[in-house]
Length: 242
Image (cartoon, rainbow, N blue to C red):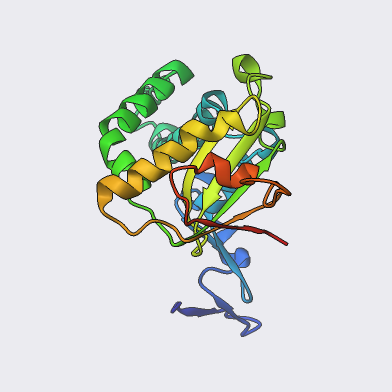
């Protein structure tokens, strides 16, 4: 970043134009116009400071948290513009050119969290068909099915304790083909398996050849439980994921 060097007349000391020794001599209104804080070694953009200050990982990304972030960001922008306006009008008022000037406008209200949630839902619904097309266009020849309770234990509110297992099916590229929540394992996954088989068949894609599971890959008599879930694919090989 290029800048000019300023030289003190007496001590001949040279400082950069963005040095705090120079910027500190300006009024608060003018300092608020600078978009970044610069030093000789590092620099940081002002908006990034606001963004990091608004982040609260412990509060998540709920509509209320988004509303609080917007309020803080809008308030800071409003204060910066108000300070600049007052700093410009103050010299005219001090010399009597302007006896009375209009105060800064009030901070406009930020839309409530309910409105933010409504807009988000409308946006998702407008892209629903595209999202479905992208999700259902993922295939693979080697699949991995894994069930865990860690996801369902994080469900809160009305969704708490509505499911016991979260089952994911991924391919050899690490892409997720399907993810479902069920109350039990085994028979509860029949609909998911039937949907995967139907997806391959409707798309005219070669069915998967191998399935890795974390349990129920073998049976001393008959078909294993994992293979029975995909009973429409007799040639599907089932292996234990180690």
